[in-house]
Image (cartoon, rainbow, N blue to C red; front, side, top):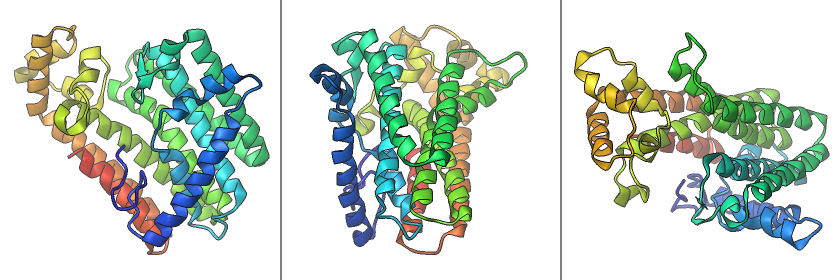
Length: 335
């Protein structure tokens, strides 16, 4: 996710006073994270801080801080703690993801499993999950329950990603479950924690939780579209990476659902080995011209519009505008 040029933040914040508050509190979160990843030995601290030091936009903790602005207690220390909880959970999941994906790089640096080995990467992820749990306990019983539910959804999403849809289940429905669990759940909790510990009303907490799940899933799905549609010079990524690796994504699944005989070649290619450059290029070309791309874009735009609709409980102002702008960014980046 690119940093917003106006505010220097990973979310589009036009109001300078709000942007400055968020920047200052994000510095507090960054300092707290550096403290919380410390272990009882230098090696543990080094391994636990490895991905954090590699960078990242801190989108989830930033969403906690922004959502807290919907209540009267945005500066409460528990808001910073909650921001650390979601970021540590996210970081922990990245260590495990890299082991599952056999990834060599993460955020432009060696992944933990490449730098050390799978055992170290898995244990480091476990260590960060435990640190996140310790911090959650400081937030009270409700936060512990929410964190446990979120962690369950996140792990279920990761597990569902490794299996095929159940007999008779729509593959697209299965994939959307994966996305909601792996990505939507923690982003929903980020917005929920922010509103909760910022002192917002129950109505606002519920609305922002729903907003977070929708916009979080939509952001992942827009990545699916960009993987097919983007030019490497613009995105900095190699187009069709998921396609080459056989990873099911939104436009691929929508194309595979076609019953048009004219799509026979594309459907055949989508179920074949695309490690060959010529076949990969042919598939990418056919998919880019297929109506599934526009279907996928419409779906993401719909998700973003539904997310914005949840914000109707908030008064007009810079906080609501920033949350709406993020949903707009999600929709536009898939266009």
